[in-house]
Length: 218
Figure 1 (cartoon, rainbow, N blue to C red):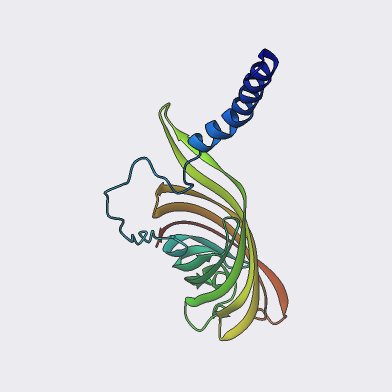
Figure 2: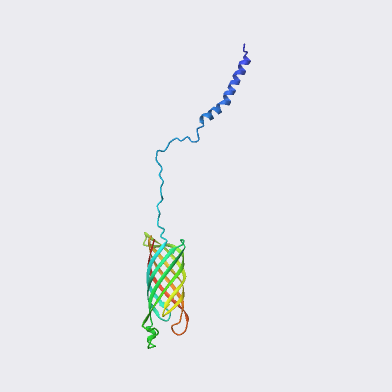
């Protein structure tokens, strides 16, 4: 026969077992498989190829302006440009230009002039490296802005003039305005430095060039 003390001890032992097992049971019930997904997508995945956008790193253009040949005055010059943007700051550019140089000023003093005819063709080509120093914008009115850049440029090439072919260094600066993503207008000032022996003595000449041109980028 169970005594009251025995019944109380059994009751307390049962309550203690329930208290210990309740958290473990709750944790077991709350645990779910790690890969249990509530919503299973029904959309079939496709492999997509991203589009290729043009980089517009290559440049081709034309220019016209004035070329001041030392000792012979200024004349119309025109030519072509071909360039490539290495980075956003640096670019390389190849240029070919041509002009007709007149010796009319000398014919007023020398009956035969300096050249066999009244004018001689001067042509040049060079390869230069440019650096964009002031990228920015040009504002047209109150509601329109066009990207622009000022740049420094220098290079080396050759000049053919009066039967002579001379190594030529060129240095200058310019400003470019982008009318569209693939079209720009630019003003360019350069000094072409080469030695020349036309007047009986070889001398280093400074020949300034001012041009206006348009370039297409692709």
